[in-house]
Length: 84
Length: 416
Image (cartoon, rainbow over all chains, first blue to last red; front, side, top):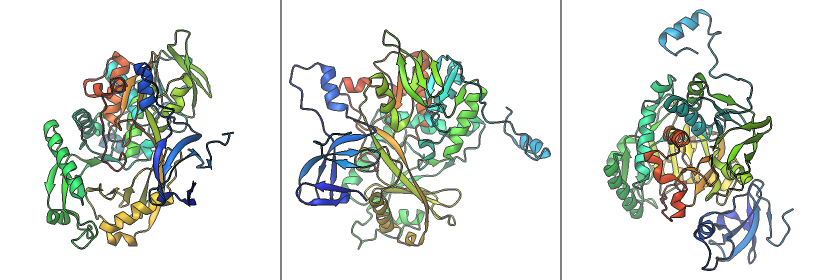
């Protein structure tokens, strides 16, 4: 059973959360090329390893937060930790 | 190799069935081929078959990391249907359904193809509106979708005793998709492999592609495998969930995310349900196999995943919602469960496309790709052989992302 670390509520069961997808880099400025824009819009990180993603504690406190989760082991760490 | 027939069965009975020919050959791995297909699953083997049969290209090697037909072709719920939403999608899946109908004959292989309707059980008015829109779009493109009332639904699926007027989500109607079918998934992989091998295609199992190789102009020139380098001017990546893992070795990112989708089966019971039942409001679907097992599927895991297990929470969701409609099933024992990694594109439609890397083709973005195996292989072979996408697959190239011309498929259990 996967639990997620809500910064407000602590470790809670994953069924309380909605996945909000992998994080994106900052929105590019308006002078980017079309292909750079499309890449930003449609191409996500899809690693066999740690993915940085957002979760929404929808059935809890309502907090949005970012974690790193391993896509094979489900191991979780905070984004500031080094993904060694 | 010989044809399967009543005569060959009788003839081989004389030698106690000890002398049947092998389905496919195991030749040594050559240094160079015209076309390399990465992944001996449904789509890869179908592509190899149609390359040889329709286009006369048989200097082809299919490279498989594990064993033939061990990926998602063995991990689906065998449903074949064409009730999609978009004008672009329906003709493609109608083509696939029609190829499936005559596939056993074409491959001379018993696929245990069984045409049976799929019935969508509708419990909310928003879903009813959406499904009526599908019905009208289906009429335009030759995919049938017929509304039936609750009485008729209960007559056709007697096991469906839940969802009455007092339940939380009473059933308000149903929709029948007549063309839906099931067939033996392994048979599809083995049939295509046998036919491709007979036409000269080589299938190399236990051959893991580590890297894509490019020449100095950036054009694809081959792959690096655990058995050495293999060269080819055309390489097709047909590996389902791990597409980006392979393409990123050549620096190519794709608009897909990988998810784990699981299913499970019950113990075998007497014939109980002769249609495919889909409950889109609850997010569960089931059919009964020829052995009598109920094959039950639910929603994918939340968040990207390369696992092939079943999460307890996903399993519970599927079981609890199924018992809402089929309370008698609580007495069933469940036998086994499995997962498979699939990739879902940004707009949840498949991608059959050439890429920015000259000579590199991808077929990915398949969720529920089993129903698309014949058309996916057929159109990918056409693209590789001619350089032009096939007419029914033309909307599904990577160009649609460049022009923000998305084909948004959603509203099903897998792609929400």
